[in-house]
Amino acid sequence: MPVSKQLDSDFVHNILIKMQNPQSPPVLLASSSRFRKELLERIIDDFNMGNPEINESRNPNESPQDMVRRLASQKAGVFAGARNDMIIIGADQVAVLGDEIVGKPGDRATAISQLLAANGKTVQFLTAICVLDMASHNRYEHTDITTVKFRQFDRRLAEAYVTKDEPYDCAGSIKAESAGVILIRSIQSEDPTALLGLPLIWLAAILRELRVITP
Image 1 (cartoon, rainbow, N blue to C red):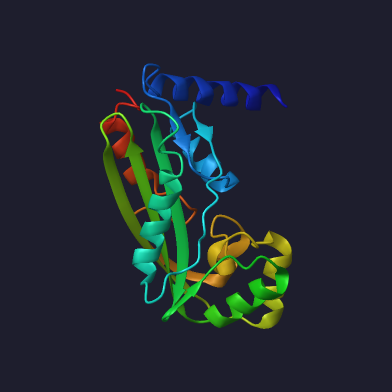
Image 2 (image 1 turned 45 degrees about the horizontal axis):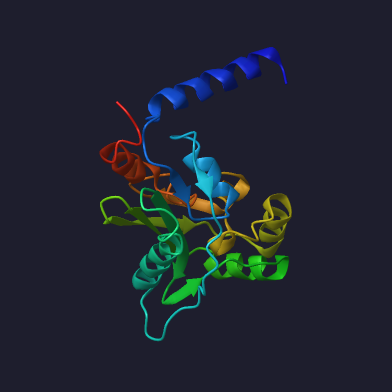
C-alpha cells in the first residue's frame, strides 16, 4: 500500500477510535452482509457480526412495510439472549415495484429480468433497521423509503450493467453506489446510505443517544 494511503487509513482508524466510546457496551451487527459491515465501519470501529438465520418469506397479506420491519426486528432478536449488556443492530431491505416485492435476484437471468421490469418505472426501496439495547430493554426502529426512478434502457444495457456489477445479492438488482447510476434517472431519499442497506444518519443518532459514539 502506498505510504499516503496507509497514513490516510491510520488517520481514519484513529478518528473512529476517538468517536467510539471505549466504555460503551459491545455492539453486534446481526448481518453477514459485507455492504452493511462496510457502512457501519464508517461510524464505529469496534463491533462483531452474526449471521441471523431466519425465514425471510413474506407472510400472507403482509404489506412490504410490515414485512421489512418484521424481518429487521427478527434478525436483531436472534441474538437477544446472547448477552444482557449488548447493543444489537438488525436491518432488512426490500424493493417494491407497483404492488410486487422485488427481492435479491441470486443469478444473472433474474437480475436482467428485474431490471427490464423496472425500465422507465419507479421503484421504492424500503430499508428497515432495529436497534436493541439489551441493558435497558429498549427497542429503536426506523424505516427509510428511498424512491428510485429508472431511465429507459434496452436489454443490451441491462446485460452490460449486470456483467459489470454482478448485483446478484442486491434487492432490485441495482448498485447505486457503483455502475448502477447509468440506469437511474433520480433518487429521492432523506438518507443516501439507506439505499446501500443501512440508514447511517438515523443509526448514528441512536448510537450517540446510547453513548456508543461520543462526544
